[in-house]
Image 1 (cartoon, rainbow, N blue to C red):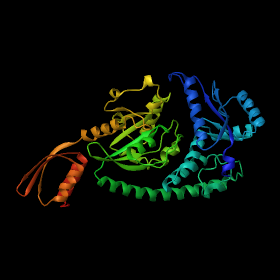
Image 2 (image 1 turned 90 degrees about the vertical axis):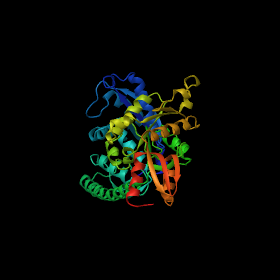
Image 3 (image 1 turned 180 degrees about the horizontal axis):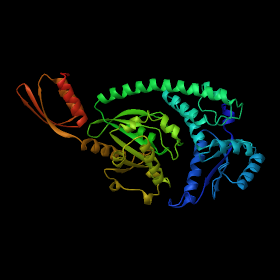
Image 4 (image 1 turned 30 degrees about the vertical axis):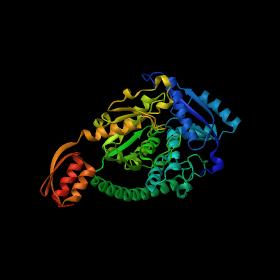
Length: 434
């Protein structure tokens, strides 16, 4: 059964398990564990779940049947029963058997990290493609966990009902329903992706470079996007506030125009199903001319978050060379103690400190983007007839006219232009376009 508004604000118990041998070499495993516990609490709160208690559980060795040890489970069972806690969130990837055994022993609903993230995506997706992608990911994930009825598949509201009660089993009927629905989703997504591909080809004819914002969820990408584009994309201090990509034009200090793309935030242990489902949407990232890696510099695990983002980028097929030349945008400097706040001299061509909230440093970022766009430009000599006004206007709009000399009916120009725009202009001339 899907959650209604009354059910959704339910008390939950959140558990993050960690073990010293698994975290060796990452510094303080306890601090990392505490940070991950705080993150999963934020994930729960992102869909209005009220966290009754959150705890760290140290494991000497994970149990194949239940992940957690008997002593911990007995203690949790007593608390769940005494406080009538209906839901346990385990910040780990549970096998179907582990999830089933935990539910039978604790007598409450249990979901893991993947199920929780899928539930958030199910509530937040707004575009048709986003909704279909998340549903496909959810069905792929849930196919091996058929422990409840799938009557919620046709409902209209967000979310996927992972937080609901057990319901009927009917495994064969459920599996057939899921397989049928997956095939239908595949067909629908192929049609949408074909349309997206055509739109991308049309955009490639437009001579504006694409700059993509990437980063860990809640790093401030949408706030920065709004600041640079004067837009009003939905912003909230919560994980996965943005799911559907948004694109806007931005004029750089040189007068050049770029297309800025805001994308879904990444997260550690991002479910494989979601990476696959959103691969088409995130192709904007793989084809971008420049990546802006937005990082929350005030976060304790900022370095590890950056590594998580780079790992997801690699999964998406973004080449190491492109990742190496991305610009690191170190956001939220306003949250640092005054003594630690960087100055303007801390900036470089590949690293910009700023606050998207206050706007401090944003002009430096635009100048940095401008420098990267200009870096690949070359100077060309162009001769036009005086009557070729449209081509002249195009060059003024899409290149830097360095010199202009009129000789009779001819114009001799020296222009600095990007390879992409020069190719576009050459094609126009070759085909006699104006």
